[in-house]
Length: 271
Image (tube, rainbow, N blue to C red; front, side, top):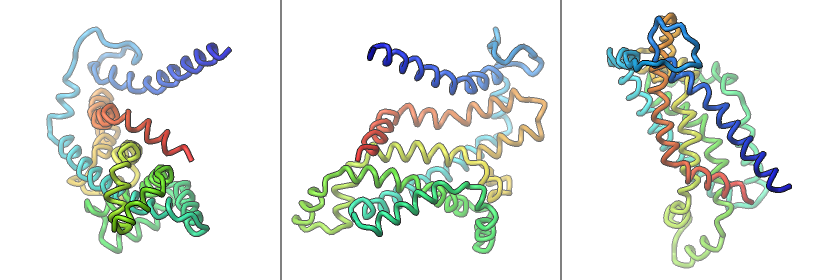
């Protein structure tokens, strides 16, 4: 009976993986076809056609968009990890009503739909001159992804024994030194989890970039791809090629960090 259940679970996992791979498969197939090729998008071409990728790269705008996305994602992720881990440490160590109340607030913030705060957020960013600036979008994306970071770091740090903090205190370490010298080196798995989960959200962000980056020189990769559906709506092939190039960085990042990602989530879920 257990063997049958394990087999069914494996089949289900493969089915879910296949279901999620279908859009990527269609994206790649469309990107490799000529504009005049009206065959089914499920059928790969019997020829190699890379002009869609060359056309997407030809004017150099996609490279500028890549640079903008990398810049925004890099600083936003760094801030999310530093601030998230620093805030999670006292939450994990202070076992009282106040810390539980604050963690519940963090969980509540995670449930707020992002589009519901666009209007007041835009008004605030307009007052502090954060529109059309790198620091403005970095600040917004950091704030939006910080609750998830705090939640993951808090659950992970709770599993690190308090005795390590006490031993460090006996050796003369303060709270700051204990965190960065004792706790921080043990956070590699959950750092990988935060990097992947928040990094993908930041890289794929469209809604905030659309409102807060209105000048072409600041456009990110998602804004660049969206232009193909307005200016070049008849040429889905180049749009598919640009989208394929856009997902490569996150795919490569996940392949390198998947081992730590799985262990970070599993260890952080054990209480």
